[in-house]
Image (cartoon, rainbow, N blue to C red):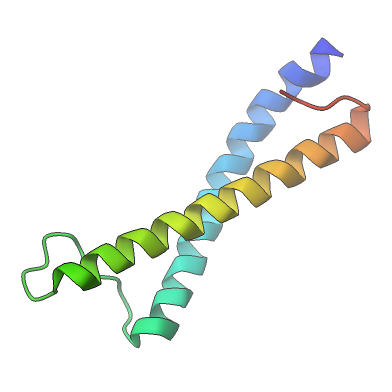
Length: 88
């Protein structure tokens, strides 16, 4: 049982990195749909309002959190299905 949990650690790291890439792509598409722009505003963009900056940051955080949770949950479920053990 312990071996499955140890073996999941590198898998979890790879899933996290892949999830970050997926989240970045999803966020860019969502921002483009909502904002009709290619790129989200940077926090130091003088031409943007506080509202735009904070909305972009909140949306990006939400997208990243949802993708991260989905990817890690899928990885844990797959690990349990393969090994019979839920990784911690």
